[in-house]
Amino acid sequence: MSSSVVERSAGQRRTLPGGPPPRRRRRPSLPYLLLIPALVLELGVHIVPMLVGIWMSLLELTQFHIRDWSTAPFVGWENYRVTLDVDSAAGKELLHSFWVTIVYTVISVALSWVIGVTAAVFTQRPFRGRAFLRALFLTPYALPAFAAVIIWTFMFQRDNGLINHVLVEQLHLVDEPPFWLIGPNSIVAVIVVTVWKLWPFAFLCLMAGLQNVPTELYEAAAIDGAGFWRRLRSVTLPMLRPVNRVVLLVLFLWTFNDFTTPYVLFGGSAPREADLVSVHIYKSSFVTWNFGTGSAMSVALLAFLLVVTAVYLLITNRRRFDA
Image (cartoon, rainbow, N blue to C red; front, side, top):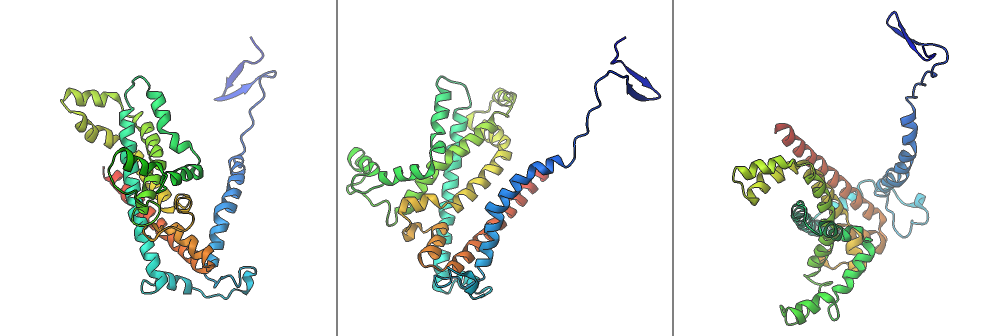
C-alpha cells in the first residue's frame, strides 16, 4: 500500500508520513489587501475632488482669491441661493440650461436605445457578413471621442461641410445651406453627434442580452402564430428588461453629464439653444472666474443625478419584485 494512503479513524482523516503537506488556510485579509489600490485610486480620483468641490461651493472663490484659497471669504449657502433662485439672472440661465439638457438627454437616449435594439434584433440571426456588420456598427464606440467630434465639426460647416453638400447639392432638400453650429439647429447637431456616439453601446449590451434568450421561446411563439412584431413585444423586450434597466440608466448619466461633445463641437461657447448644463457650468467657472458659483452648480447637479438614480432604481426594483 502506498505511503500516501489516508486512514480514517474515529470519524477523522489522518495522512500518513510521506503524504502531501496540509494546505495552508487562505488568509481572510488577502481580498481586502487586494482592494487597497483600487480604493486609493477611487479616493484620489473621485472622493477627494468631490469633497474639494463641495468646500469650494461654500466660498466666494473668484479670480481675486484663486491663488490663495485661505483668503476667500466663507459665504455658506449664498452660492446655492444665487444659483437656485429662478428670479435672478444666474438662476434663470441655469434653469434654461437645465431644460435644454433634459430635452437633449431624453431625445438622445431614446434614439440611441431604439437604434441599438433595432440593430441587435437585426443581427441576432446568423447570415453572411454578420460579423463584419457587427464590427462596423461598433466603430463609433471605438473611436476617440475628441477626434470623432472634430470630424463632425467639419461635416457641419455651412459652406464646405458634407452635411450641407448632401442636403443642398445631392438631395436638393433645401435651397440655402443652413447653419448647424449656431442658432436653433445647434441642438439638432449635438443630438446627432451624441446619438452617433452612444447607440453602439446600447447595441453591444442588447446584443449580449439577446444571446441569453432561449430559442425555444421564439419557436413556441412561431408555432402559436405570432408574427415578428408580436414576438418582439411578447418575447424579446420582456427578456431584455434586466439589460434595459442598466443600459437606460448608464445612457442617461453619460448623456446628462457629457462635456466633450458640446465643448468640442461648439468650440467652448455653445449657443443658447444648445447651452447644456455641463458647458454652462464650465463657462460659469472658467470664463467668469466665479468658481464658487460654478462649484455650487456642480454640487446641485450631482444631487439631482443622485436623486434621479435612486428613484429610478427604486421604481425598477419594485416592478421586478412585483413581477
